[in-house]
Image (cartoon, rainbow, N blue to C red; front, top):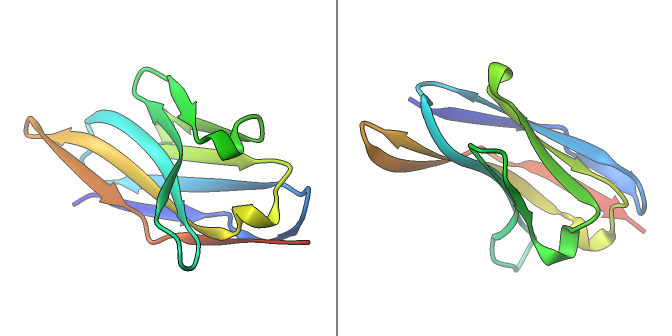
Length: 119
């Protein structure tokens, strides 16, 4: 009933920029938070950035000062602006949403979008 679709990934050079988008459809009347996670080959999935329903954001130390998370509630969309990209940022990026449904918490994931940064 809830679906997340990511877009905006691609191949860029070191120092370049990308903006990821995630559009949410379905019944999401009570959102706790939305965020972006990433997973590189051989690594665990890690949290990159989170934004709460109140607009408070937090970031992984590795991306602070370079990435910015934002949202457009009217469009049911969350964004991740990525600047000064590094090869270490190469990963599949996943959109996540944490909602209350019928008073119970639920967590949903998108299909992922590939980001590759070349040196």
